[in-house]
Length: 527
Ligand code: KIV
Ligand code: ZN
Figure (cartoon, rainbow, N blue to C red):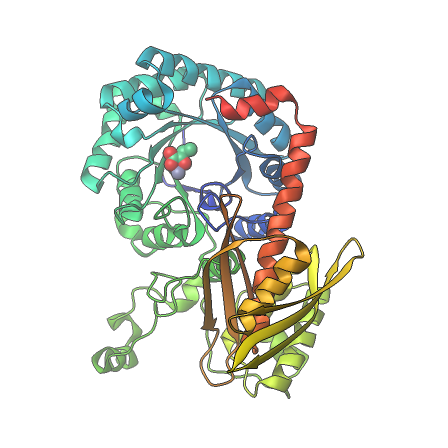
């Protein structure tokens, strides 16, 4: 079916390309939470993962396929039967599904990575698409590193995969190398020279190495692309992917120029961005377009004066269009359930009664410690309850002793879901270091601490501190985060969050090794 020329599909790859970036890995319940938020946001396609990458990935794609309805659920696969079969099985329960197969086409990748001649690339790409079509009518093909591929050869590959049954052809700027005019030319060339191209959806997938992912995606739309692949907050490999919120708001704010629409409920952008940031531990820069703290703040006197006269003097979008409904209303311990529920709703979160009751309990406990609760505090409470404790360890008790003349000491008592209760005491260079060491001793998981930061969720002396911890374990980066008015406690909980992620990943990995056949495992190593 020919694509609708007025409509740009939004293909979200936060759970695949985004999750692939160091420190952004998510647990399965977190992936489900993000997938549900994406469905509410109105994305057309959710790329839920790369099922052949690991058992954990397979299970996450399968869970999203079973539980998240509305968008098309997509799984990535290399051009081999084993990968494609794993993707097809993982997606089998999705009412609307897509298999996305890819193979690199550029001379650099052909020579150094694949060691394949052009004919071999075309043969394998066609074979991949044909196999995928055995399982699914909706098949996307990506010539990886397309932007550095010889145009004539790219056109040859694209024509061959369309003939083989691809319904979407995606043109990735895998290494973030292209620039707008050059990239538009690639799309124009393909539209002019590839037979059958008018019958498929042309898609664009840009990385941000030179800071041009959004600009390159927009230029591709002008040149005929009708699907944009992007991620929330632009997370992704290296410098990241095209940022969903930026590209969507550019299309909306400049609709008269682009003449296309998306299906995105833009008022869901801000809460979705906050959710992904809190789950991945990847902070949003203050000056980030659309969702950064300063995106709608006006500091200079001239700007403030203009804004008071008319907001459009210095504002091209309204904060409420992206779901930013900050108010100066401050809640405190006398605020009731109704006021809190109302504020949570205004901040863009939907909670069921059980979740709201938990938030309300925590709200009351926090209001006893802190006089005034700002939007940042409410957001942190909601995200903590929404993100839940995925275990398996919980912190039952923490005590620390510090004095300036001797090493600090920390005592922790941890509870495991399997019923174990373990206590340990350790010394360290300060209470946080001591608590981290006590947790390592209690759980038997030793990590290398790479980064540790604490930032105030709001302003003021009694602000809550959000601690984020990045560690390395078995050559992978893991992160954890937590919020509390006591920064030793938030740091300790953030570290335990990391340990929990490692234990869950270990469990998923070892189950994978036990359950998957030799052929399936071998497929991971093959192209
Ligand atoms: O960047 C890239 O080339 C990719 C493909 C798999 C689409 O992520
Ligand atoms: Zn990519």
